[in-house]
Image (cartoon, rainbow over all chains, first blue to last red; front, side):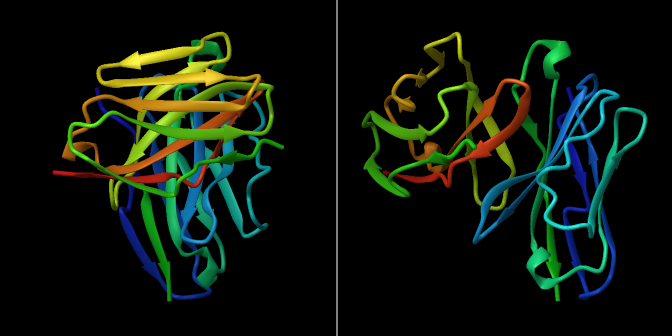
Amino acid sequence: GAGVSQSPSNKVTEKGKDVELRCDPISGHTALYWYRQSLGQGLEFLIYFQGNSAPDKSGLPSDRFSAERTGGSVSTLTIQRTQQEDSAVYLCASSLGPSGGSYEQYFGPGTRLTVT
Amino acid sequence: KQEVTQIPAALSVPEGENLVLNCSFTDSAIYNLQWFRQDPGKGLTSLLLIQSSQREQTSGRLNASLDKSSGRSTLYIAASQPGDSATYLCAGGNFGNEKLTFGTGTRLTIIP
């Protein structure tokens, strides 16, 4: 079946602009995760959605970052007033989660964000 | 707080050799450990997931083990091939906290 998809694959934006990154998880996966991969920081957790529970936002680096998940499926990560340090690859993953009995996470191809 | 370490950062071996990649973690309350490979410019591909109740998992030429008491996991690759060249990442998650904490990876090069 289809894997996790993300769009756009690449995004170049000017400093100070807002950007939206989209993630479509694997159908039936109730858990959705956002991670960021940058040269200096490696792969770091941003936010986690599980079903209808309140999301775990503990990894968001500042209040310029927000995410939502509509209808328990598609998720959008929004970065407001982008800064150069936001340049990174943003990765989305999904899993069946605790209700599905599996925590194995499947990753999308990522969105490469460049802030100029 | 879980911390994950992978040493060495890079490894080169001749084709056909067996090899072991190492992963260390600090919190023995780890619930699951997942190994991934990442090809340049690509996302992560899941290789194996080991839950805390298991000691090892196998898939084809790959075998991953988990030793919670020593805080270590290993990924064994048998009969290495040039197509195995990639960066290998391990990541751990604790029960009730499903976010993964990643190591910095080992960049593996198989020399034909």
